Amino acid sequence: MDHVRFLNDRPAHDLTYSDIFMVPSRSDVTSRLDVDLTSTDGLATPLPLVAANMTAVSGRRMAETMARRGGLAVFPQDIPTDVVAAAITKVKAAHPIFDTAVTVAPTTTLGETLGLIAKRSHGVAVVLDGGAVVGLVTPSDAEGMDRFAQAKDVMSTDVTTVSPDAVPEDVFTTLASHHQKIAVAIDGNGHLIGVMSAKGALRSKIYSPALDHEGRLRAGVAVGINGDIAAKARAALAAGADVMVMDTAHGHQEKMIVALRHAAAARDEFEQQTGRRILIVAGNVVTSEGVGDLVAAGADILKVGVGPGAMCTTRMQTGVGRPQFSAVLECAEAARDLGTAVWADGGIRHPRDVALALAAGAGSVMIGSWFAGTHESTGDHLSDHKGRVYKESFGMASARAVRQRTRDHSAFERARAALFEEGISSSRMYLDPLRPGVEDLLDWITSGVRSSATYAGARNLTDFAERAVIGIQSGSGYEEGRPVDRSW
Image (cartoon, rainbow, N blue to C red):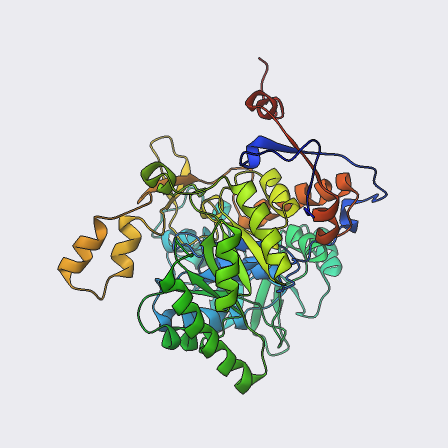
């Protein structure tokens, strides 16, 4: 029996997100906050969203922020093992509620300070002198000042401090009473723990962090299918990965199946030694046959999507791929029959797409390029000739990514590999002035998904996939649903 229901007959042709819509059903869900968004992929993260294992997207800042709000980020396979281990150690050491502070010394120049502030959405740098908090610097403090001035020259010494044990409501009230935007959490020994904005306090009551067995933030690591797979898998697990992603563009191939078996054996050995359960994600696939073969080889979750990503040229270059909604729908049905789940990977451009992927049965939804244009992604802030801020993004099969992945090969081998690229090597992902941080996008996405669930009369994602009723629309039907921000 099909899990999702169609308003009319299920079509014979494949569909993508813009081809479909969801109709409302009778509902007794009175508030979107009554909807439980816990993922149904076996990881049970409080939020069914994953930041893609793209070099331009997922680093330490993204991993912390996603986990703090209930989701997950996956470190790319191209990052050296020791670097990944160090990054995960920092993620695990981060406070699960308070944001990690940007810190500078009193003598740090304003130019460097402003560059660091741009890495976080809370928009402030904490000035430390000998480990003690002595002030705060915001971009407005630096207006009109020389970039070679020092933090101590412009910092505000009016710092609102709270206990690390303070509940978000109390932090919000304290900030409101002091007319401040940022609270600094300091422990009994005077050590800086983190910071929280008023909006952060509100979010802390809406979102629950994704925590591991020791109450630390969770993170995933991607592993390629070339080389010594068992050694790579053991290194990822030793680094502290909470989920391991076996990653290649064409997941339904013999090399992936062999790699999965080696990774699963290393994972099983790790579980016997530690008693920890680690799930393996593998992909990408777009058919039920691909799901079955990778599950048989050891996959717990299947990554679904060939060609829908914004940085991917596969469909135009090779003709290979599949419209994403139908791919997710078929693979989710096959995975469910085998006791596993899928991640919908690629093609997400609007909150509606996330809702429709979950309605198709995805256990979680992976987002790449959309998240690349945020404060928390790995790239530096750049500006175009109009002053608009953007970050560079690139595909993981592009020549740029291949050069990084083959950095240990000979010059000839690297040059030869670069000839066979499938992906954009440089694209501008502009920061949305209204939603420049990944948390802003999470607010927008989850608001839409929660509301979509209430329209379906669903209180959780399992119910949502069962109750959603899908219709097929024309291109003009899709255009009709677009908001109009100016008169026509």
